[in-house]
Length: 336
Ligand code: NDP
Image (cartoon, rainbow, N blue to C red; front, side, top):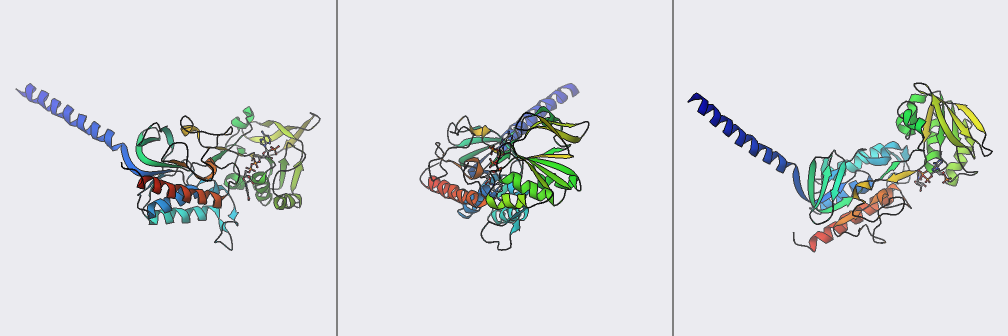
């Protein structure tokens, strides 16, 4: 008798836990009219517009909440800030503005996508699935590395792709920055204010950076530019202590440094969507010219993930706005 009761209880327990598992599974899939992926100027601007249009957007912040601007110095070219503003502050302000109108902001990274049919399914952190009538991709771009073995070895112990994040650790020390574009120039200038000496390693015989930045770099005494140099190896035992470069004649040039900053451009974060969306050879999502519309109806791309040309906070914000407006229009023309 007792046994029977016990068995029965076990059965009940099983039934209960089964339905709990079902509930849990269901709770892992949510539905929304508008899903925004990314939390840079494009993502937050899309959220502000979508929330104000009553689309109740869900926004996933991704791996770097606030996006690339949180790793920059003052932003002086975003209209409305006559005195300039720190990148982090600007992103916090945008986030607050998106929240004020009811955007549901969450931490998580898109790890999978099924855009084969509507509602589109996006998986976050490999477990949570969101079904969305419209998807706004604002995943931005990520820093590129040289691809050296030694670079991998010293990542986090002397090699960095963000002077603003890590420059402080090299106070009073010698460092190198590789790259000849605006990012490299800005990073070299930033580091020149903290470090004793900054080598700027440029593979060509000229810089690609804007004239203003080039002049600033040239006029900074503790920046030494090494034109026509490439990096063969970053050296050290536990941490970086130097680098071996190759000059235009193929000769080795050794420098002693404690930090090595890579500033050679970015890769658009489009891999998760590539199976369904057209991208250019660098991976930038291709949209209908002049719009954030991808080839899939209801799926939009905005900001640096689709813009190889301008890549500015203000242009990213503008395309974020366009994406939200187009999402709203698309939802208005369809019955779900
Ligand atoms: P860019 O693509 O403009 O420049 C990349 C630099 O890295 C180039 O000098 C390139 O050399 C060099 N490079 C690339 N690969 C390698 C490699 N394997 N080894 C050595 N050097 C390499 O990237 P940025 O990140 O500098 O800028 C991206 C965009 O963002 C640009 O449009 C820029 O104007 C903008 N930006 C604007 C800022 C501002 O206005 N304040 C600040 C930062 C960026 P090469 O020239 O030989 O190809």
